[in-house]
Amino acid sequence: MTRRPLALITSFLILAATAALCGQAVSAYLVSRARDQAERLRQEGEYDRAWSTLESALHLSPDSPDLWTELGQTYRAAWFFRQSPDLLRSALQAYERAATLHPLSATPPAELARTLALGGQYAQADRAYQRALVNDPRNPGLLVDRAAALEKLGRPAAALALYRSAAHIKPNEYSQAAEQRLAPAREAP
Image (cartoon, rainbow, N blue to C red; front, side):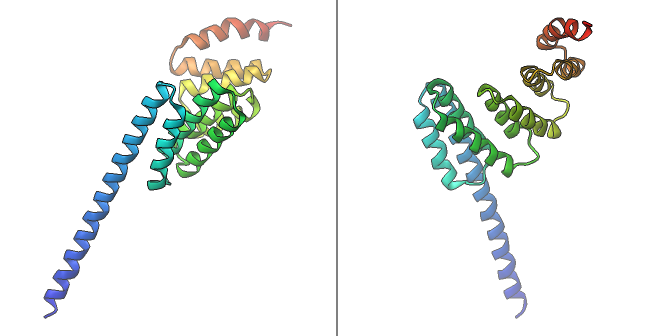
């Protein structure tokens, strides 16, 4: 008699696990589809439709850092062309939410930093770049981007050191140009 209830419990657990896996797969598919649609709409300049698509997807997957990052990119693109402070604020909030949901990813703080730099907020951008570099310290693109922010902050020696670090990892034209631009200033009396 005890075998039958055990078999039923085992079957139920297998079904529950299968349903959970299917739910995760469906959720991942919906996230991917929403991101693809939003990117296409964003490229066509349909920002309102793009963020509506992402906001709808966030109702189904509110804890998706990928959706929040994509939403931030959409708001940033719209802000860049429309110059609305509300759109900038929305982009920054979306990136912060994504960073909170996925603290080990360099992408949300890097995108936050790029957005802050586009907005001329270089000190805040530098702090966000530092957060991104904690998770991806050998990313030459992040090193170059942070160096550019430091340059805007009037810190040429620190900027040059980062440009050189980036070039050591992967030679690039930004670091080469920085050598010509910043090294003579550093060596001057």
